[in-house]
Structures are given as C-alpha cells and as structure tokens.
Amino acid sequence: MRRGLRSVLSLLLACAILTLASCATVRPWERESLAKKPMALDPDPEETTLEQLFLDAREGSAGGYGAVGGGCGCN
Amino acid sequence: MRKIIIFAAAMVCLLVSAVPSWSASVGDKAPNFTLKDLAGKERSLSSYKGKVILIDFWASWCPPCKRSIPEIDMLYKKYRDQGFVVLAVNVDKDRRNVVDFLKNIAPEITVLLDPEADVVGAYRILGMPSSMIIDRSGLIRYIHVSYTAETLTQYVLEIRPLLEEKK
Image (cartoon, rainbow over all chains, first blue to last red; front, side, top):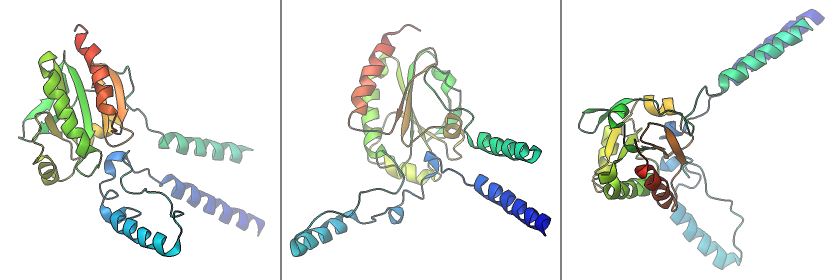
C-alpha cells in the first residue's frame, strides 16, 4: 500500500515537473496579439476617464481604481 | 539518497534549459543577418561594415514605435553623410500592417522585414522597441530597450563620438 502511494506521488511529481517546464515566456516580439485593444486591462481609457469624472462629482471621491497596464508591455 | 540526487539533477536540467543561451550584449560582435527590405531586395548587415549602424527592432503594434520611427528617420537624415545607417527591423507577421504604418511617415531609413522573427530571435532583445548602436568595427556599443522622450538625445550623444572614430 505504502509502495503504491509512493508510486502515485512519484507520478504526480513527474507530471508537475513536466507541466511546469512547459510554461513559456512570451517574447517581446511575440506580443502582437497581447497589444490589441481588447487585451488591455482598460480597452477604452477615455470612456473610463469620463465615467470617473461623473463618479467623482456624484460621490465626492476620487482614485482607488488601480494603475494603467496590460497589453504589449512596451515602455 | 540516490533518488534525491537524481531529482535534484533533473530540476537543475529543467532550470538550465529555461535560461536563454545568449542575448546581445555591449562589446559583442553584432551577428550578421540578411533580410529583405520593403522592395524585396536582400540586405545584409555585413554590407554596411565601416559605418555606424543603428539597428532598431520595431513593430506596427508597438505604441512607442509611432514616435521612434519618425525621430530615428530625422536622426538618419542629419548624420547619413557622416557614415550613419539605420536598419529598422520590423517583426510584424503581416506586411500590410507595416505599409499602413509607414504610409504617412514615408521614412528614408532602411526598413527590413523579419516576419519569422529569425533575426530578432537571434539577438534576443529584452523589450519592444529595442535598438543597438554598432560602431565602425562591427561591435555593439550601446543597447536601448524601449523608447522615451530622452532616447533621441541619448542617441545623438552616443552616435557623434562613434562617427568621429576611425575605421
């Protein structure tokens, strides 16, 4: 039984190693799809700015909405 | 104990295989390449030997490139008579995107197409856009990753002394 458990654990470990090894880094020149507008965290920054303006006026508060980012990772 | 050693060795092998083998560094000889330009003519880096070369890796989908390409073109027009050359290596998969991008800029720099990413992959750049300045003897002297408001000034400060160096 103990030996069987050890075999199963060894198999799981081997699978984990193989799966982790398949994690690949997206190279800077491969980010064409990531650079597309729908892939950005905020696809329409102008609309968000306008919404934020209305929200600020109504609620009397501002900020707390994170930072810009996503996309191609340029600059 | 033996199993632990085998496991540790396997982990080391996996880590080593994940590390890039070579990336362009300052002081390295710039690897030669041959690519086609927009007109379909083949151009080799080696044919520009003896000149100061700016290799700019760019793409139509890269926002900073909208600024960098016109400014680099301006730089080229200013220093070309002194032996300055720009090779703008584009990595777009679709040539039409490159043509659309350049339509309104009409640059005079040499635009080369690398749709299979053979050259950009060989140089293993760290970001998009990236640029390298190569001296008259073919050595990589400066590497820039990304393009900001200060990059053009930095280019000028680096290129001027290189243009004065002898072959």
